[in-house]
Length: 174
Image (cartoon, rainbow, N blue to C red; front, side, top):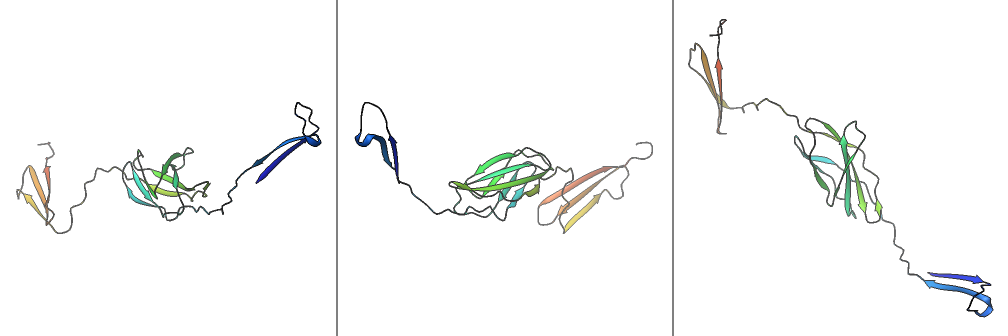
């Protein structure tokens, strides 16, 4: 591309023929076809724990990175992270909370629209031990009992032994 600037009637130390003054500049311009930068698809949780969650989505070509925004459901402020691959582990989350995620693809000089909100829930803290698996044996000792009793549950083939001790008190707490 050539750019020409031409000024007329310039009074100055250098008088050019025909009273014109100006300059000519040449530029190289490369015109490339616009590429379509798609939003990520199939966003899903790969694993979710108390304080972190691993998310994944389909690879977008020609993505060079992804911008991940997330927040607690119902809040206004977003946290923002960047990933070079179609996946990320979000850390420092609160247990037992709903979260919203938005992901945007970055393709060179363009960006996709933000993918619609994806929601997930972090795990909750419980004080309940997992139930013993099917196929277990249990024993109560001593039988009969007077003041305390012991229950053993043996999970067959797993090598896990659950033991419980119960103290039985009468109405006088003895």
